[in-house]
Image (cartoon, rainbow, N blue to C red; front, side, top):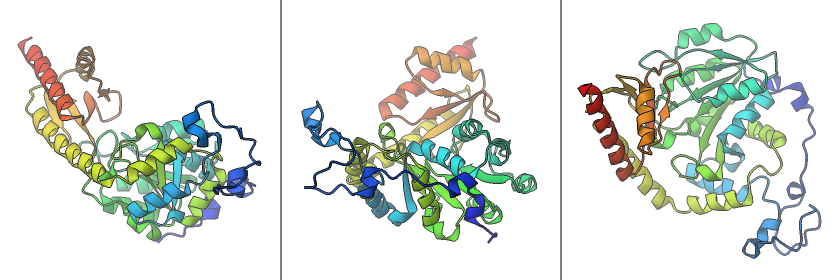
Length: 361
């Protein structure tokens, strides 16, 4: 194990921060209390059926974290909830990287917000491209490029937009070797046969695992991002986050969803079946050069002709996919989310029609 020192990675201004203490942090929201501390409207909301919403939400989402803890078998003290994973990515930058001094390492093609957030914070972004075709990590290059100012590494597995799992042994090697923070984004882990590294979080004090309720749980509109890390890292996130970062409504919706596990597993099974159907169907279409292996709820498909033209054609048929052709190592590629069976059938039929038109020309 490397010589990891958490405090040495944290910005000096963060180490010296006196966090804002909200009214609801100071005094828990217990029933039958008279709340005259947070300048809320004691008469309620104009929406009579939302009477409780005149109060601020639980700033630490205790009930929701307990539900997630029960489902994932991880202590609530090692769970942080953010307004989507994007808030957590922003927090990681704010806590662990210094503008104009430190650098962060990412592995394109990958999720775009790692770079965008870094640029917002004025942190240098070092890019080490995945190995072409296999879309795996280049360990030799990573080891050579690490330097004392490398504070964060972002790894996405299953990777977006390629859809593949990165080798677990490679991720573990990097985490053991790197003396900074490793962020492993597992947004799509429920669609993968590869086990989450979250069950081994105690082995890696420098590891932050990102998960979400947006994908497999179908709660993209509720914006619930999850960070799993050591208690020490979680405590720093709670100090730096905005006081009421997740609304009461989002917390209640997420709790209800987590209580309906049977439907979650039913939908997950259907998505995996539809992913296989789409893979096999797309492979049979002449203009599809390659459908990359996927452990996510989407497929990356390489087109023989211009992916942009196919993208625009599909738009005329009211089918919206993602043209990824401008991203490194994704030339003429479309990223296609797994839909319902009816949606997927319609998509396949339209691409087949387009293919026939192209071949005739």
